[in-house]
Image 1 (cartoon, protein in one colour):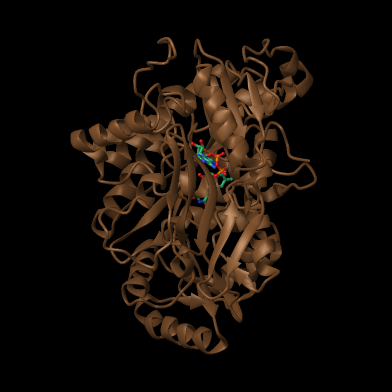
Image 2 (image 1 turned 45 degrees about the horizontal axis):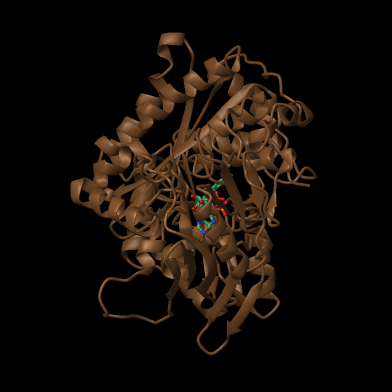
Length: 540
Ligand SMILES: Cc1cc2nc3c(=O)[nH]c(=O)nc-3n(C[C@H](O)[C@H](O)[C@H](O)COP(=O)(O)OP(=O)(O)OC[C@H]3O[C@@H](n4cnc5c(N)ncnc54)[C@H](O)[C@@H]3O)c2cc1C
């Protein structure tokens, strides 16, 4: 069963090895866990629903709790403390586009605010209801989870928008196909959510981001249905798919998603290489991608992340042996780990590996073959479970991410990490910070920074610590010419920074789009952009 106040399935967990706990204590000091609230207590605090009755709407209090928050750090604090502040007044689970249409008509007529909900894995406050005079309804798309058709000539699959990652892949793989979209939230996030928040999967180097995979689909809006036909390419004016990609539930409900799928590859291998330092590792990464080496994934960890990952791996003796070997090969205390994936026919994999090897020498790479790569692949969706084990020991963890041109990367990395490291100096608190590059492009790359700090003595103070950290990190990102999000989207947490990259005209255009699709701002208000509400005007 899905955990109600943290990540994933109750049956799964990822333990924190003792050596890793010792290591983290050395980095940030002693800490202890905050007390968790029980689900039953939270349910008792849920107010009466303000929604008028409707046969498709469920007003059950437990459902309302389970749909009130996503997976951001403030969401965790709300769920663990039981202080949610706002709950949706009800939840609906449409089975098809007709029911979506029926609910939209009801919502419009009764002045209800509507939050589209995919897997609820947002880490930027996308699906959280905010205080409103109007009733709030959350629309969980999870019942629309089927592969509706597969065109094997054109490699186009059509899915219900609420299909979660594992069901996307299981239904395609049964027919010999894959979408190849593997965000780390794969287990719970949905295909409609990926489109609505412009998601990026771990193997985007081969398969593309969701923007490249999203071929078209259907969107129910207040004004009617928007159909996006699939074309391999088109010069017929601006591409309307771009309006829906990243729309974050503001313009309508995506009911069907058509995606470009591929035949399952014959072979897929993951390899781990080490480098003496960050410069060699990141330059190698850039060299590979700018030479168009046909890889499916690349991730390069800086030295602190490398050290932390090796501690988290457990297996102390094997790691000690590996470190001795690496030191002997020139990769000492500043070593950086690079994981790369190659996917394709046997011939393509052999060719790509040869190409990787041909670039290695000037960067002093040490290859460790496939052993660590296999372990990465096996655990790739388990890492989110570690957050629970860390939390139970009193560690708070969050991440920030961006993308920038290669030219800006060194300054960006230095600024983000140093500002985060020092952000709690006024409380004499240390922050353990580390980063990696994952999604890499010829022009630049994403930068993904994780920070770990101690929980304070209570929830409000812990939230305050997070606010300081998030603020300095977000400011460092925009000041260093990074986007406020490469893959997590805008939601409510990043909305204050959006105008910096969109500019005055861009923001005006986005507001006009909201106005066009949703004149009374009933759809997911305050997510993406914070327009002033006009809902309280009498309905026609
Ligand atoms: C542990 C963890 C790891 C993550 N790793 C990645 C990663 O590797 N790559 C990545 O890109 N993201 C990642 N994320 C972020 C998140 O998973 C993505 O943003 C994902 O795309 C959200 O999908 P979802 O189905 O959960 O959508 P939700 O979180 O439910 O919703 C996200 C937004 O989309 C809207 N929406 C959802 N469905 C619809 C629909 N059918 N119609 C209209 N609007 C809709 C919502 O209103 C909301 O604004 C991660 C999150 C977590 C918690």
